[in-house]
Length: 315
Ligand code: C5P
Image 1: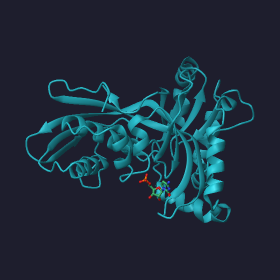
Image 2 (image 1 turned 60 degrees about the horizontal axis):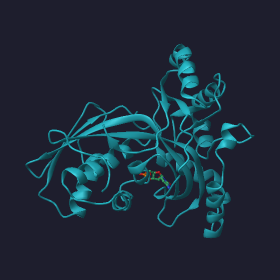
Image 3 (image 1 turned 135 degrees about the vertical axis):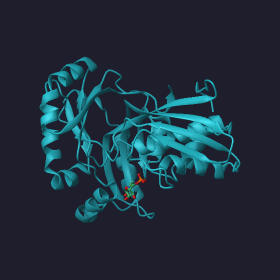
Image 4 (image 1 turned 90 degrees about the vertical axis):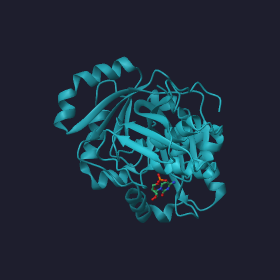
């Protein structure tokens, strides 16, 4: 794997950035029970920090500063380390993983997927397995639809379940967001997709030609049309389902859209996190600082983030 990731004093520290969806379009059903998607995902400057250190016994020892993340086999970090051990047949290997959690959990920001992506990269390096990012992308799709994206991150088009990736070179590096999340809300992704299906199943596209036409449209969509407010808006098909059930998210999206200098606003993934897009980080910072009381009154945690051109990276 060619990158600048290196160990210091036998410890590897990685940043695992969150993502937002700049486009989430549901095309139809897949044979594996998932949905066929056309998405544009974007890494943002809000990240968890993971440390990796080889362990003499063949155990995976996991610690976190978050009480909400359990030390059990359904933890995506532990699943990722175990999968890699099995795939590379290095069952004698052990690792200590320490997680500093900053990305809110259950927020539609792929925090768990980012941690799993960092674990694959971290264990690959510490155990000197030599797998390429492409191999890790393929392997990681077994664990979750957003993990392949989180490895390389930046801005990518994501098709299929989300695991078929096309890197985009242009990512409007000056753009920034104000990201917010209702403090008391967490939304189940399977629930959101199930409700969407109940409502829109009859409108689903049914064949590959139609899917490919939508992919073609997204590949050729000029994101500047949103930035220049040419009558285009960020699309997230799950937003109508989630806002119908949780009215506070609709209020939040309107509030974000009306902030000074906000270009557009949208929900990320299946929510509940939402964001407002700004042309420039200075506009975003100023608006963020001027609205601290409003965020609090709406029961929102809030962050001001720039957009990143990378995924998992050395700290
Ligand atoms: O793959 P991941 O674990 O992130 O997916 C969570 C859930 O979201 C799935 O169990 C499924 O209900 C829904 N989903 C879907 N189609 C996708 C991705 C996710 O229906 N392409």
